[in-house]
Image 1 (tube, rainbow, N blue to C red):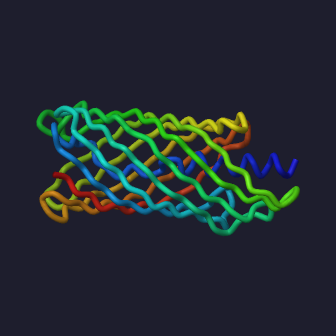
Image 2 (cartoon, rainbow, N blue to C red):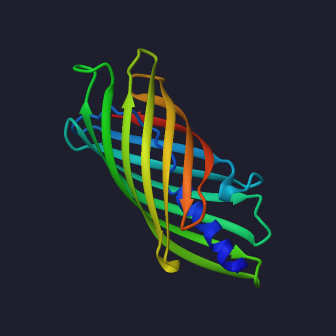
Length: 225
């Protein structure tokens, strides 16, 4: 029973850190334009444990397929601290892509509006203390549906995102869903570069367990050709 409980907790980390950061506005890159980004993320109340925190470092490369469609590839590496008694190690890698479409721009509306769909592969290494010391590896996948609005100002560009995520841990036949609400701002450092800061509130339901909330803070540095 303790092992199964630990497994559900581990799966919660899969869900919450799979691709928690948004770090982009609703505006399309522009046809033929490239985007390069580095980012860092910290998350509190990991696995519904106030003492546990997680950190993720990652990056993204995006390309403007058309004037409205962008493709963004992401990769990230995460680790945690403040483990519960049943665990002594958690590390995770995330890799995948997001296809985003800008539906409306500020030429016709007060704000820009975009939608997106994404798919991410997940790989995790877990060190168990109970019921006996062991190290296990898990794999999984996440599907993402995104709705985002943003507003352009001269110096900064605030944005609001709503995301629905469905995550499956293939090797344990466990599934999870979550809803993310993200509020962020992109500061225009130069004409081609931005610094992005955002807060995300995650509402996570792991398997058939009760849902809980977790908060994250993300920082990104972005350059567009």
